[in-house]
Length: 220
Image (cartoon, rainbow, N blue to C red; front, top):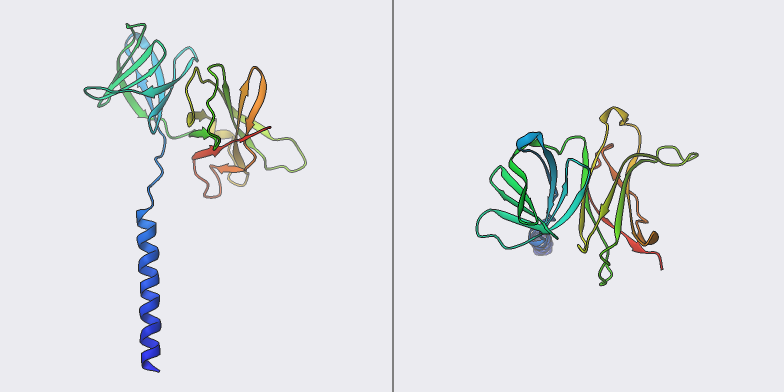
């Protein structure tokens, strides 16, 4: 009887050890990081970094999806004629090799009052340069009424590929702890819907996160 008990305990410990080892070997999914930058001449911009991409929102509302490129020092991202240089808490943006946003320094992180993440899909196909990504923060608490959109972002991909980072700034006074909030994403080409999210991605309330990785599915 004691031998059976010892064998049972041994097998249980072996199973738990293998389980914990497998969990430890699983890579952690990188989380988006969002920062506000204050530049000379009173200019400001916001940048969200995820993996090897950066979503930059300029003061005029223009949004750039930038791809990380090789840099001898610090970090460097590019989208067409725009290049973002960053080192420590300082950054610069150039346009056509000319100064555009200069002497920029990070302000307090913009994680509060922001829902961020990425939009991607499983299909191994490239997005055309004119593809548009639309992301919405919605209140879906009422089942007898349409969803209420609290924040929305439209991203011109300009040839950039998934995952596409996003950052939705919302008004915290409109958030109610008992309500249900989700993030919805769509990808359009020539005003035609080609990808859409069909899963509920809850955020903000009831222990839900403020960062989500959204998988959209083809509408074909």
